[in-house]
Every structure is written in structure tokens, then in C-alpha cells.
Amino acid sequence: MTIAIDARSLEGQKTGVGRYLINLLKYWKGEKDLRFILYFQNSIPEDKILKSRNFIKKIIKNPINLKSNAFWQHFTLLAALKKDHPIFFFSPSYLLPFFCSIKSAVTIHDISYEARPEWFSLSNRILLRKMSFCAAKKAEIIFTPSNFSKNEIIKYYKVNPEKIKVTPLGVGESFKKKSVQFLPQNNSAAVQDNYKFDDSEKIKKIKEKYGIKNKFVFYIGSIFNRRHLSKIIKAFEKLNLPDYQFLIIGKNHTYPFVDIEKQIQKTNNFLKRNAIIKKDYLFDEDLILIYNFASLFIWLSDYEGFGLPILESMASATPVITNKTGSIPEVAGDAAIFVKNTTDTEEISQAIYKGLTDENLRKDLIEKGFQQVKKFSWEKCARETLDSIKYLRI
Image (cartoon, rainbow, N blue to C red; front, side, top):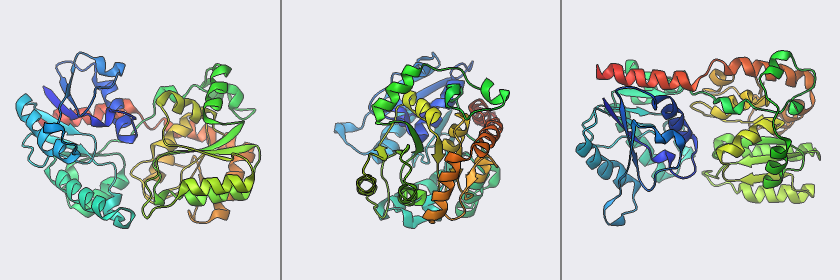
């Protein structure tokens, strides 16, 4: 059985969809009697997972160096599928080729562009809504990471609920390697046993690399208006905790545009120190260390299909501040500090202060976080995804 996959999300700097796909492939690489054709647009990443014998990797390019993702999706990829004759096609990211006649599955991580179109530019709004709707109608299976997203897809796309498969995401074991010295004191043996001692030299290097002087609060994810980074920055500024910095990782995709970089500069000038640090991207090896050595993770959002960073923080023994909207209650359980009003800088500020200073609360959140993380597994996600595809083939 041959399964074709749109693997473009693995090229360059892997973000959410790329990390989702590579974790599926990690558990599919040993599958007997299965071949996977991975289609790339520009280059094949140097990733040891992709070196498995049952992965056939192909770069397919648009004619005359045409730089169009849409043309690649609907014509170049389609031509490759017709030539290679796979039994099934899987897209890990929202879209399918319009004229694809092969049985197919698509992962729709969320449909915020349907529920809240005002958060998107007119061109993105039209493109995402039209193409995602067509993919949902065409696909034999729709994978989605939460019951919340399943209900949203049913609500807006009116598809048969039976063809939607909820496959929650997981957390890699590599997140669970934190030096005990960074945990709150007097943790239970269960907490201590989750970790191995790490090389303190790594801690020093990672802090120097990102300009971190001592302790820090952490946020990672694309920056959208719905995630209220501007409010969080104001809340952090209001606290004025000289021993802490705020590290923000993510590209600014706000619409209407919010000049986050300018706000950070103003805050740093006001506080007279490099209190807030922003980077567009972290590589995986740095990401794991940053999660592990953060004092607190904050993730506020008015709409999420899942919220993987919440789980990754919990797995790293880093307490989480979030809110109860969309899929977040499914992901966070009761293992977080919850903000009721995501636009109230005073409430956010108080939550940050409490999360940094209340050691009993921190200990409780860390232990609850370990229990919450146990409910999620990349292995289970990969197995259920592949089983659904194989069952449909039968």
C-alpha cells in the first residue's frame, strides 16, 4: 500500500504543522508493507527520521520557476499523484488539490477563519475559507485534534460527523529532561523522578544565546490578535519584576496589524532594561531547553484548535497560565492558572505574579501537569491516524 503525503511543512523552519507531521512519520517509519511518498517543493530536510527505507522522498517543482504555492498544490502536486498512482493521499494542513480523484484525508487543525473572519485579511479570508471548505467536502477522512474543532467543522461545513476523526496531539519524551535544580524545592519523588540532571553548561549557553540573564516568563506561537500579546506585555510591564524577563518566540501575523516590536522597545525603555526579548523562531534543540528552564509559560487565546505549547510546558515542569476558551479546557484540564478576562491587564498581571511567587501553587501545578500530559501521546495520534486510513482502504 502506497500513501502519498504533502510534506512541504517539513521544509525550512518547522512550525506547528511541520512538527505535527514529523511526529506522525516518526511512528510510521517502521510500518511493514507500507510505502510513503513524501512530496517536497524546494528541498528535502536532513532529518534522520526521513531516512527510513519506506519513505520515498521527491522534490517536485513548478514549471518555469513559477513561484506559486497554489499552482504547486493544485497542478504540480496533482500531476505527480497521477504519475505515481498512490492508493491514498494525506494532507496534514487544511488543503487538498481541487481535482484530486485519489482517496484522501486532510487534517484541519482549526477553522478560526470561519468562526472569526475579521481576524484575517480579505485575501486570506477568501482563500482559506473556500479551499478548506472544498477539502472538507472532498476528503474521505477529516482529522482534527480536539472535540471543539470537530464541532466547529460540523457547524460551519455541515459534513457527516462520522468522517471526522479526533486525534489529539502528543508531547515528545525529549521535553522531559530538566535539571532538578530548576524545579521548586520540596517536590515529591514522582516529580523528581521525571527528570535527569542536565549539563549546566547548556543552560549557560542557551541563556547567552538569547540574552537571558536569569529567570524568565515564556511565550511561543505565531502572534495573532486573538492571543493578546499586547495585553500580556502591558501586564508584565506593570509588574516590573527586575529579576525576570519575558521571552517571546513567534512571527507577528496580527491583523489588524499591532506593532509588537515597537511596544517591546517602549516597554524596555520604560523599565530601563532588556526586560522583553523577542525572536521569530527557535530550533527544536533550543526549544526544549527554553521550555525546561522557563519559570512560567503564558498562553492566552480566544480561539484554538488545540494548543500544543500548553502540554509541552507541562511536560517540562513549567507552570502554565491560560484561559478556558475553545479547545484549551480539553488540553489543560485543571493543571493551569486560568485568566477569565484575556483583555484585563490587571488580572493577567496578578496571574503572572502568583504563578512566579506562590511555591505551593507551583508545586501543585507541576504535579497536575504531569498527570495531564499522560493523557496525550504522539504514538497514539500516529497509530489512530494510520489505522483510520488503512481501515478506509479496506
